[in-house]
Image 1 (cartoon, rainbow, N blue to C red):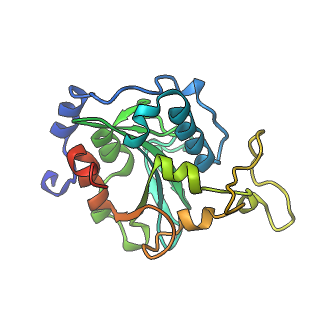
Image 2 (cartoon, rainbow, N blue to C red; image 1 turned 90 degrees about the horizontal axis):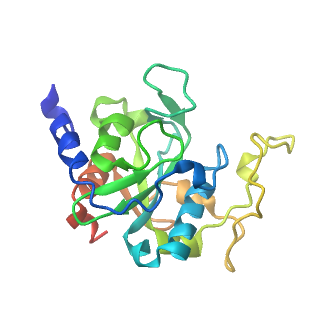
Length: 219
């Protein structure tokens, strides 16, 4: 039933030949990474672009993926033990870099290439929401990298158990905070379009927007 795909195999092959966006991070091992703190990993990528590739910052986005049930399926995730590498997260965060005719995805938790062409990531890592049960359909909060750097804050309390113990070891650097907030991660994870930062999109809109970088220019 290929006609129901948001992106096709032909789209993947075409964009592999059009990787025009600059590979601003070519080696994931050189990126700041703490397992299960994807939001901070992506904040660090945004900060690296600001510091080392400032002309590219306006082309970059932090994208939170979640839904009202906080149950989102993603495939090709490195932490999975399944053959298809399926994981059900409460939320996940990825980094997008928009070029003139293609968009690159930087996901520090995927087994897909780093970076990965957006349409390949959409086809293999996201797949088609329309084939999923409604409880698992995802929304995407898309925030420009510069806005994300200026607004995001986390005291990491969401990673503490009821007994006050870390669910996973935290990053070694200090918590990310702004002058306005010490903790607002819930407004990024929330997919309520009337609150928080950036723009909330459904899956079809998100994939169509970033499969066509000219459309993403207006995001």
